[in-house]
Amino acid sequence: MNKLLHHINRREAVFITVLLILSAVLILMPTGFQKQEYRFTEGVRAKVISVNNMGIHSSGILKIGDQSAVIEIETGSRKGERVQANNMLAGSLTVDKLFQEGDKAWALIGFDEAGEINFANLIDHYRVDKEILLVCCFALVMILFSGYTGVRTLLSFGFALLSIWKVLIPSLLRGYPPLLAALAVGNVLTVFTLLLVAGFTKKAYAAIISAMTCSLATCLLAIVFGGSFQIHGAVMEGAESLLYAGFMNLDLTSIFQAGIYLASTGAILDLAIDISSALEEIMKNSPGISRAGLIKSGLTIGKSVVGSQTTTLLFAYMGGYITVMMVYMAQGTPLMNILNSKPIAAEILHTFVGCIGLVLVSPLTSLISGFMFCKKEK
Image (tube, rainbow, N blue to C red):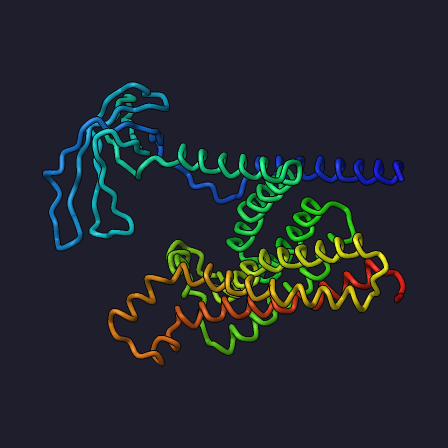
């Protein structure tokens, strides 16, 4: 028994080491889409010393014009210098920002051939320090609550983020088949995540098989219903900007369908490991239970868990479209118009394809776990 535990622990240590190496490689690996900065420019953090709003004109709730400010550079080659900076307003609440005295800003400064600063533009408020603080709070809570498992979860979280940013997104931009790219990355992340969270155990293997199978089912459903709904991928935020940026060869509809698959993958693997873990505990505490009894227990657990998970998925998706729904209601748009509109139809597709995948997870995980945990029918 001790030899077996030692073998398992050594295998997990090797696995984590390999994952750390892969994460380091991903961090160092260029995406191939690094934007070339303008010559003689530098991005810096700056403190707003004073502002001048005389150049701002109000047009209803919108503001247009130019806000000027005196900023003190806090990073980069000109640290400590004070310069005049501009903040152009375009009359859009989405992109415009107003600065006040004492704000931290991210600015772009430019130099002339003599090396003197000849312009400074305020890009946006500086938020990186607050973002790092939030991430650290998340990591601390995770470690305090879950211990070593929390550390492995954080490693899985980081690896997933790196894989999507450094592998999936560049692959899509290069024109690789979106669904195949998403399936490859999604399945790799499913395997790595579940092995990190549950270790090299039967419950992990059962969850992996079930999650990958159900994720594939959601991918097929996204293709079938995505085509029948006749929704173009341009419905995604920022999709048309890609075309205008020169990526005319992109298949936005396939990217949209790949996004549906990827969005449901996390919830599916979460439910799969929940059910397999519960059945493993039942097996440990009731070793005499039959295979049929274990599968039945899994189905019973799944009924209640699936109900809450599908509602959670609905909340997550609809939360992003709450303002769209408010606009429709405020304008008195007829219900049939709402249901037939592209944004709402796309959200219905997202929600219910994911929910079908979640519903399929419960019986499949229960069946697989029953055969894995019970070698023979009792």
